[in-house]
Length: 246
Image (cartoon, rainbow, N blue to C red):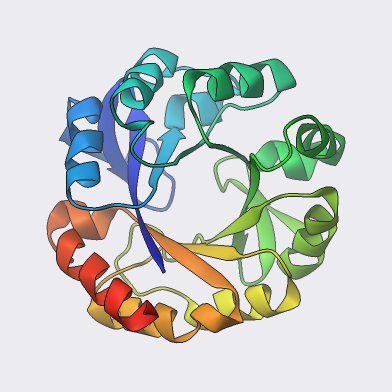
């Protein structure tokens, strides 16, 4: 079970948002590279980056910081990135920097042909990110809830060749209200590719609950606010996950 620390980048700083609201950001560090090194040294097996400015602008906005992070930790652990990835040239540039996985979210829903092309051009490197509320997919920084059922859409994208699906319950992200384990398991059981949970991780009970459903196809969980505010000690949680997954 992977515990994946998140570094959300806004204006070159490490921040956390509540329910995706850009104006409701808490700055946790003005040195994201140092933060990435910290999570590596804490034993993280993967790192999750989000270019928040890029997600809203539709093109990369924190590329310099991302390059610096990859230069420091990219050889030590896989790094995945979402936000502002809208064309194949951007994907190629990031992979050339040392990125392991690109995450395509809103662009996949709005332009599934792009996701299909990305999976064909860069097999083994494309993750799809699906944000949902009450089982319906949301886009545009969670501003729009579509009519797409998350399970149906994930099955379609699985056929394209994505390596995994990141599932975010947008009602819980940044709220420390607990992971929606039931919805995550429902999605994982419907797919053959693994699912990574995101949103709401609060304490060790969430870690235990996710480890218990690892056999159902839940590969890991992305954690942000809980590890920055001290609700969870990352090293302790990773040790627990390792023990329960052994």
